[in-house]
Image (cartoon, rainbow, N blue to C red; front, side):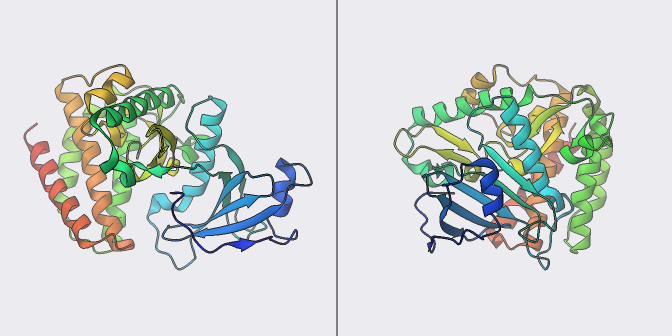
Length: 325
């Protein structure tokens, strides 16, 4: 969502635009859509709206009916809406302000989400411009953010939709294994070549370590991913967080930022990973899930051969480590 991307501008949208009635619920009557910027290169259809009062909004619509989706991607918009609502009520900083969520068959013809647009450049774009101190400051802020997000707790484990509907799991072990089995089935559906027998064997063997997690905390699984962290280009400080569609109720340490956390991340979070065999097993299970997801997504939406090769190497390494525990 970098401000340096300048897509075609559509000026003075008609008052009869389907979003008009939604905007009237949240803004006074004189405010109208001044322009629409389509943002390309995303799974969802995304537009940045500029209102006549200067406010900028982001509108995300469901992917087209012909777009192949992973099982968990079926409810990404609903999950993001639930996560935004929870975090807004908790007063968590750096989170885009939630405006509206519309169900399938609404005024735009499909499910859609409206939230405030966060101005900033991604960490991925700015990485080369950051000093060691700049990066430590960002990591410290992300660690603190992970802790504050994790202070939101639920009574059961699983996806935000499952828990909200009363079908959450009583154990994190059951919820995580179900999650991982889902991505494995996505892989099998796409005929992805993976060591399925070895993966399932190691997951069965190490999954008892997940039983130690007894409090379902809110987790943004992709937290810390450079493409989902927005910085202020001037101050180089954290400006916003996107990618909330991958939230779930589980172990806070499943967040990507804890895969190989820096000392600044742990300082911001306020505690260090315990050096136990169970903790090591859990981190390997989470790394295994991430690696499988990164391999599989390539067969649904081409991410580039280099990305798949790196993910396969990571999976091989993780499975080898799992076998030693």
